[in-house]
Length: 631
Image (cartoon, rainbow, N blue to C red):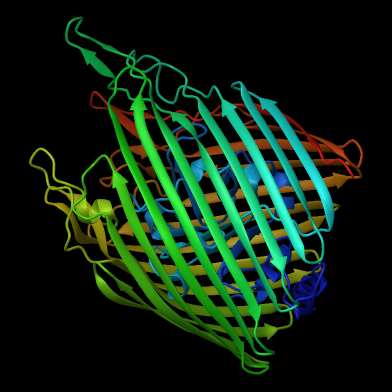
């Protein structure tokens, strides 16, 4: 049943079929039952050993998320902590690992900052995104450093249809929020393109308490984004293309300490803000060499630039990081049962900062191999990657998986994977200040070992269950102390995840549950900002031209400090949404986030010895209209 049912979308790709491979990846981006990121190739989700969640553009339009992090918070095992409102600093934790221990890709290219190790997801405009894939569990045997907790891959907008199609969207809502976007896509059997631009701005909310005169203003946010994709099929076996994404703008934030005027003995508003740019350019060429050999070469460049300053002085800080990369992958289908992936990676990081780092560049090169064997009663995966880093030398990452089809409707999967995270430029080279040690060039990579058991069951034609039980052990975790960063900490994370998808009386439901026990093994305390229990529920139904939906999310309490002295209260959020297709060209949409106007915080800050929560938006309404004229 069911393997055929999940593989069937692969046979229905438009324009050309998978056998010809023309535009294979672009076509697959529209399909919910395939995954690309697990092994860097198109495969049915049911054939992947990685626990995965996929959001297509249709899902994004239906769910109407405000941001990328809003979408990710729906994934079991993924938690989001931010410092209040749109554009604020955002951390994403996959299966209890830290933000820097998860890899974020845009069109196959790393976008994390080389100084902090984190990716500024809060700056990515959701309107320019075609698809998001979330892999939970280590994938270092495929991707190398940072993929301890998992991988988030974001694909920019694509075109898969012939002809020319313009689109326009305008939205307005609470806190003087405006969303505007324009797009144009087109092509034929040989050439396709997509061009998009968007502008979002909001007056925002006051992220900290107004009782502090140093910074009582609202914190505005402005984002300008463009995306461009172009691909061309030179023959039935060779195609090439380029993808571009550029997000830039300004995000205000609060500084409770303000600036002190020694003449008046008072603090005054500093009104600090960050000018940001997150951009990515990737190009590729795909070649179907023969019946058993496919090859892909990718060349990429990404930038992560931030300049923080205030409106009343010339004081500023600048951290710009740049990355050039080259990837080569070869997929070999040896016979009906055996396939092989052979690949090589290279990338170089560079830092340009107002802070003088001891080193401002480094390179990493790697080779990887993965073998897959598929028989009637079981299948296996075995992978190995070797990274050679300019700073810390060589590191090997192994992975293995065994899939046992119990019957046509039920699969049992057992897997083991190793992961690692290379120290950042801040960890290794940040200059010492005021007699304090800020870096350590002798740091080793953080390492991990993960064990997982998965159960996948098609309970009926309309009911599917996926459940995972896992353990992740992390060693040599980098902790900042009085002697600077040191490899002194270890952690153990035990977890359970389950996803239930059901169609009942015309309603499409998706229920996600996650329970984790994320502990520092040295102290026994819970890791910072990791809630032990999360639940998410999405319900949607289509009534002819009217679509309605509801979302509910519950997050248990957590701690904001390693000593577990400062708790963050749990919270529950309810949202409603609706869309109306006026005709084939015009659609209206409306949503209400935080319908019950709950007051909650996802992170704390300290002021005058007291802990306070960053404010999140209360009840917020958003109206929009989308026009896709037929030409």
